[in-house]
Image 1 (cartoon, each protein chain N blue to C red):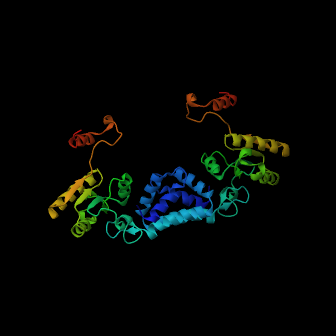
Image 2: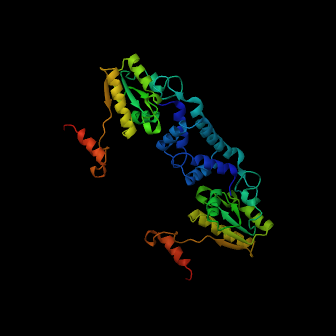
Image 3: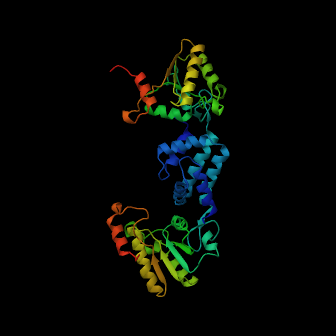
Amino acid sequence: MTAEPIERAITELSRLPGIGRRTAQRLVFFLMSRREEEVAALASALLDLKHKVRECAVCFNFAEGERCEICSDERRDSSVVCVVEQPSDIVTIERTGEFRGRYHVLGGALSPIDGVEPDDLHVEELLARIEREGIDEVVVATNATTAGEATALFLAEELHRRFPALRVTRLATGLPAGSDLEYADEITVSRALRGRHAL
Amino acid sequence: MTAEPIERAITELSRLPGIGRRTAQRLVFFLMSRREEEVAALASALLDLKHKVRECAVCFNFAEGERCEICSDERRDSSVVCVVEQPSDIVTIERTGEFRGRYHVLGGALSPIDGVEPDDLHVEELLARIEREGIDEVVVATNATTAGEATALFLAEELHRRFPALRVTRLATGLPAGSDLEYADEITVSRALRGRHAL
C-alpha cells in the first residue's frame, strides 16, 4: 500500500516505547516533509548514542570521554555520593538542583527472581570508591519499588558492616507534592506517617 | 550535566511533532539500552526516507520506484481517481478498504493567505491525467477545512468546465461515527441535516 522504506521507518519507530503505529506514521510523514539535512542530523545523533557514549570509568554514568561530566567537575562535593539504579535517575535528581555531590550508578536493582544478584551490580566498585575517595555520606536513591527497597537494605547492611563511620541515608518516602491524601495508596500513607516531622 | 551526544539526541528528537523534552529523554535512554544494530536499523530507516523515497510520476504519492504501489497495481480501478491533499491521506482512505480506484495528490490546499495558488498544486497534472487516462469519476477528498473546501469548490468548477461528462463527487460531511449529537458543532450538524438520506 505504501513505499517499502516508509513501511520500514514506521515499523522501526513503533519499536520505541510509547510510540504506536499511528504516532510512528505521523512522525514518518513529518520527516518526509523535512529537508534531507534535518533527517540526517536526527539519524546521526541516534547513531552517535552508540558510537560516542560510553560508561564513566568512575561512576558508570553515561560519558563522552573516560569520565562523565559530573565526575570531571571539580566543583562537585566529592564527600557525598548518591547511589542510583540507572543513569536516567541522575538526570531526575540533577533537575532538582538540590544535590551537589557525585553519583554512582548500580546498573539495576537486586531482583533474585530475575536473577539479578549483587555481583551483577556495580557494588564492588562503590565499596572501592568509598575506600579510595574518602566519602562521608552515601545517599541511597534506588527506586521506591520492591527491588529498589531490597537493594537499599542490602547496601545499608553492607556499607555499615564495611565502613562503620560512614553515614548512609535514603531518600524520604511520603506523599508526592501536590497530591491528594484521598488518592494515595496505603503503603505511601503509612510511610508518610512513620516519616512525619515536627511543624 | 549529561554527555553531549545524549543532549544532542534529545534535542533532535524533541523537534518531532508531539515529542517533548521528557519523551525525547525517555526515548534516548531506551535507545542507550538497546544493541547497536537496533539503533543503526532505526537510523538507516530514517535516512532511507529521504534517499529512497520519491514522488510517483503519475499521482505524486510517495514511491520507491518511478510509480507508487497503487499506480503500479493493475487490479486497481483506473476509471475512478480520488484527489487528496497529502500522501498521508491515502493511508487514511486505504485503511477503510472501501476504495479500489487510484489517487492524485495535490500537495496541499488552496490558501491565498499563505500564498498557495492553483499553480502551486498538482492541478494541471490532474487535468492531463483525466484527458489521458479516460477517468469517469473524480472523488474530491480534500480536508473538511476552509482551505480543503475552497480547493474542492475550485476543482469542481474547473473539472465541470473542462470535462462536462465527468462525474465529480465529494466525501460526505456529517456526524462522525460514534459521536454524540450534543457535542457536534453547528456547521457539522447543519451539513448533516442537509445531507440527510431516507431510512
